[in-house]
Length: 93
Image 1 (tube, rainbow, N blue to C red):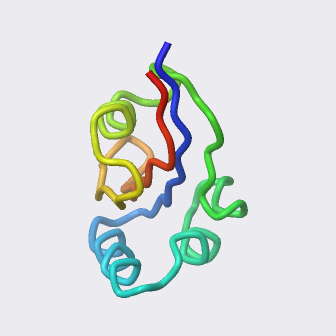
Image 2 (cartoon, rainbow, N blue to C red):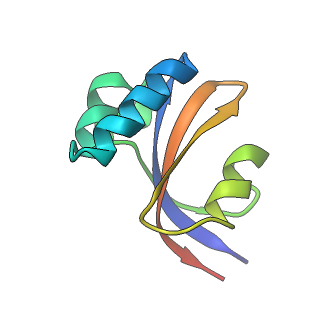
């Protein structure tokens, strides 16, 4: 079964999500911005979601985590929870 490790940052607006993605691209640390801005409890851990299996997260997450490039910030990804930035840190098939 496929598994991955990733981190994410969850905010209420696409605009803020895009702003934070730009700040990361300019050199700010994903972890620091997740701690400051993410409304998910994982924000306290810098957005770290730990290890999880395909199918454990919402479909929008799975689509990105199990198909897109590793160590790249993806998003905004819209879910029922809000807007996410996702960074896949590892993946196993």
